[in-house]
Length: 389
Image 1 (tube, rainbow, N blue to C red):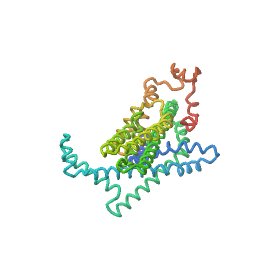
Image 2 (cartoon, rainbow, N blue to C red):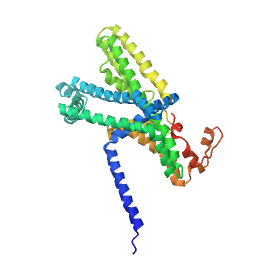
Image 3 (cartoon, rainbow, N blue to C red):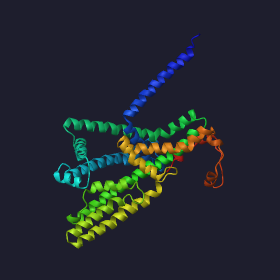
Image 4 (cartoon, rainbow, N blue to C red):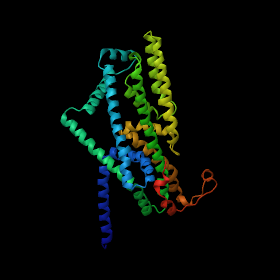
C-alpha cells in the first residue's frame, strides 16, 4: 500500500493544532473565573465605550477611558462588596454565638436535627471567612494580594482587547467559516441578550445595593439606637440581590427589617420610636425599591430569556461553580436558549437563515415588510451596531 505523504502531513499538522488547542483550553479552565468576569466587564463597559464615539475618539482611547471611568471602579466595588458581606456574615455568626449553649438549646427547641454537623459547618464558615478576609500571615496576605493583582491585570487587558478588536475578530470568523450564515444569525441573537442581561441585571443589583446601604446608614445616623438597622452593609447587599426577583425581591429584605424594628419599638414602651421606623419603611419603599426598579427594569429585559429561568440561574450558578457562577450560568442559559431558536432548526431542517420563509409573527414585527437577507449580507452587518442595547 502506497504511503500517502500529504495525508500524513495533514494528520501531523492536525495533531499539532489539537495540542495547541488543548493547551489553550487548559489555560482557559485554570483562569475560567477571570474569563467569565472579562465577558461580564466587557458588556458592562461597552455602553460607555460606545457613548464616547460621539467625541470622535480612537477605539483604543475610548476603550481605555471606558475601563478607567467605569470598569476598574466596578471591579473594585465588587471586591469591596464581597469583603463587606463576608465580614458582616462573620459578625452575625459571632454575635449569635453558634458555639454557645443558648444557641444549641434554641435549635433543639425548634426541632433542628443533627446539630453537631450544623455546628461544624458554621464553625468552618467562620474560620474560612476569617482566613480569606484577614489572612493567616504576612506571606499569605502577600500571596493573596499578588494573585489578585495578576488576575485584575488579566481581566483589564482581556476586556480592553475585547472592546478594541472583539467585533472585528468575530466578523472575521464569520466571514471565514460561516458559509451558511447560521452562526451569524446566532451571534446577532445572543449578543443583545448578553448585553441586556449582564449589564442590566447586574448593574441593577449593584445600584440597588449601593442605594440600600446608603439609605440604611443615613437612617442609622439620625435614628435612635433602639430602632437602628442592624448590619446595614449586609442588608443593603441582600436588597441588591433581591432585586433579581421582580416585584417582591427587595420587599423580602426591608419589610421584615422594619417589622422587627417596629416590634422592638413597641416592646420598649416608647411609641414615639414607631415614627422613625415608619419613615424607614416609606423611604425604603420609594428610594430602595421603586426608583431603581422603575428606571432600570424597563431596560434590562431580553427578548428570549425567561425571567424565572434567569433567576434560577443566578441562584444555582454560585452553588455549582462558585462565585463566578453568578455570571457563568446566565451566560450558558442565554447560549442554550438562543441555540434552540437558531441552531436547532438549522440542524433539523438544513435551511439557511436567509432562505427560510418568514413566520407570521416575524412578518408582523417587521411592519409588514419581510426581508430576505442572504448569508453574506447578514455577515456584513456590523456586530457592534446590531447589538446596541
